[in-house]
Length: 628
Image (cartoon, rainbow, N blue to C red; front, side):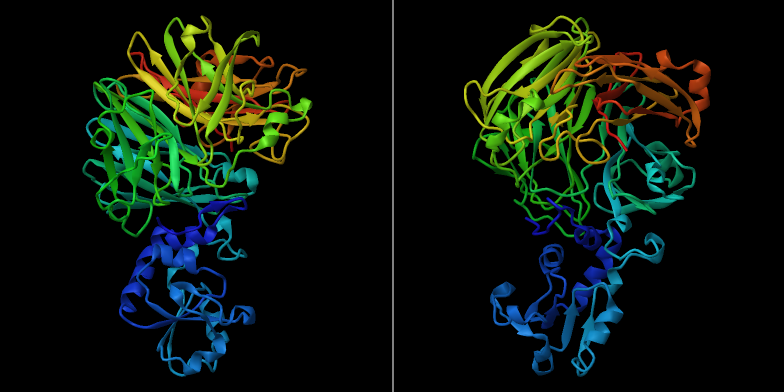
């Protein structure tokens, strides 16, 4: 495992982003090489050592220096003890490494201590000035709004990243998107930037255009994204379409990768009969991943099977899971030990000529079962809900599969509440106190005959315990075309005036989260077909006595300018399925253009939604929506 701190209760560790940034890797490796074989005295004034050595393990530290009198003589890494900074003049080391990005400050601190010794800092690994915002400390999160995206272009597939300048909502005058593209071998094959000056303007990165612009061969790799000038936060959000080229009917959408590598991931379904499951392993760092670092196991079992190959820095490798588990079939599911080597991985299921792509989810290591969830205050009603669409059972098969998503969770006491689009309850189905190794996938079509939505909820009638991190994978099958799509998400408490800890959440502001701001991209005009956008909005209610929503759909053009708006309404515990083509006029959609999009805004409640596009051959994509 790469021993780095990435994300915790206080948020993301910006030091990790600073040390792992692709532009920091080369100078730090150069420093590593220049000091190879030399004894080094290390001074770590800000406690950077663990993350630093996790990413750059070849520094040979023989003496650890501190200014903290309470640490003197105490145990230091590598079996050493902490020595006084004032002892440096008598140390035998001729090289001093200071883990600080502030070189001038450290040079002043070491006046009269070096006696001819060489002083090295992390100064060379600082990002160029154009990446930094004036007046902010170097390790301010707004200097490191970064993320990765799976990115591919070949004869069979193209990818398109779509987002918008939502940073203007936080006061940014303009932002610059800086991109670096890696091929499957981890080699940089393109680098460019794109300045966005208009507030709310959309940003589209199409792999076909990039391949043509840089005269690239076919590639399957990853795209590194750095938003320069970000305000408010450091979360880079996007939707990522995968579209079949030529006669390939494939169509998928996933959303942003989690920018913080995790130790474990789950919500990885085993392949069904006649399916191939490929997990895309993408090294997110400038350090190699040793053989047997990555491993998988069937959910709830102890036997781990390892990936026995080395992954070079930024390399992409498509792992056929049949090489590790030829005997395992859906509805079994896997968990992955990623050892903090990569951001949220993607998986691809190949069935004949069609493929579908989705993402794994972070399995929490910091959560333990929470007894209080069983006895939440009555004002919180049914408590945690996981809402998901039920597409018309006359045309689609609908499945839901609960996923254990914390390392300590052993049971999942669950019930399935089903609603029609008017908010009428169609039935409640107790699923049992599922064990971690369960192999249950619920066929919704066997329970209802009408479109609407479902909500997975906790039900303790047979015991069990919960952790509040309830997740599930939802799968949809167009029985006519054979096309499938899937997505996964987690539960929250929805639309209660009373709160429990940070629930109910919203995309902005503290609990209770009683507002909605969702992003919906429009369809696309391809060479031989039009992709038509759809949206499935759900009004989940943990407690009753809510009122119909007052939801405004704002249609915006590519440059972020306002085109028009429409007001719609969703009833409590109900849902609404719509096509923008049926809401807005063709003239207004033409004004919005190819890069236009919709902001779904509601100040009365928190709606949750799923979006996708469909083609004329019965292909469709589907994923949960996100907000800015």
